Length: 466
Image 1: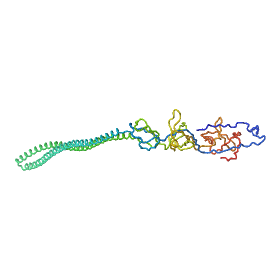
Image 2: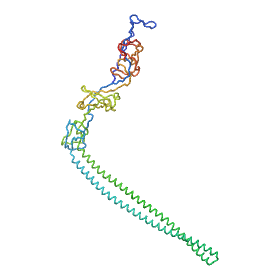
Image 3: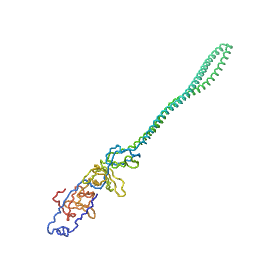
Image 4: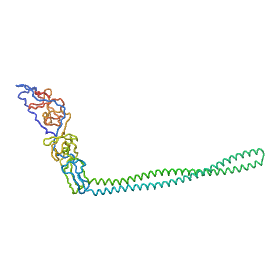
């Protein structure tokens, strides 16, 4: 914290040198007797440096880690293994509660899980068999429809091919009759020509009928082909659907199986967890501070049965103002003092909420000392670095004076004292930081004299200028 600002009174006596000097009309100083000598003063050059302030606080000690062991289950205590003051390791059994009811619940859950597995196995076989039968029936029906459509198509195809061959043969016969008729007419055989003409007419009539039949069969062939292709597609769809359905059924069955078995196992896990609550173990290593259970007493899930503290290292808690809080960070070093002994530590927590009653902020720090050296609850002195000025202009604290216009110092410039106003920063008992007004290397007058005024001649003392 800042020291109370000192105020020095400069010598303001106008007649300090009055007995030795006579002012002439031109303003020149003349001696009337003894020669006026320079003021002998101490001087020091302003330096660049760091200044850190320390503050002290009063804090209280507590274990770094302390837990209240509250059982999750209630019941009659059957076993207690540790007393107050005993050291326990994490995982040690502190006490046990009668767990007969929990054991029965676990056995029931295990039987239910076994029954669930058996039911799942039976249901899986029956469901898969029924599905396979249904899919096989669909495939048989589709295969039968496909085969019937295939037979119908081939029958129409054969009939069409026969009619088409007959049309071709008839057309060839007509061409032959036409040639014979032409030869007969040229030969003048009227009777034969008449007979050939009659055969030609009959053949042409037969050709017309055959073409009509062929056209009809062609339409039937197209329909049969369409039905055949549709049956083929239907069979393919049934086969693909059967494969997908079987896969889906297997997936659904697997999912149902997993769900059923998971629920059954969850019941077992829950029962095992509930059973574990009846054996209470130490959550941390440390020393037992208090115990509230005894054999044959009732342990309740609403009150602590044990209090365990890890006192290998301790925590100190103290309160600071907001301005000091803003200078502290987690990890900053502190010193804890008790009975003349000092212990090192570091800040672990800087509070962010102000205490409404005190207006202060809570700070916590870890101290490298165990509970035997710093017992739980004792008060200690805490010292921490707070305000600091880095790479600042530093001069002796006593070199700064104050008047109605603010802070000032005397610089030695060409053998004369020069009054210079400055802006000050933080300071301790010996050193003060100058924010503005002087620079590194300026020679500051560090000793006071009643004759020290602005403009007087000064001479350095026998001590060398620092």
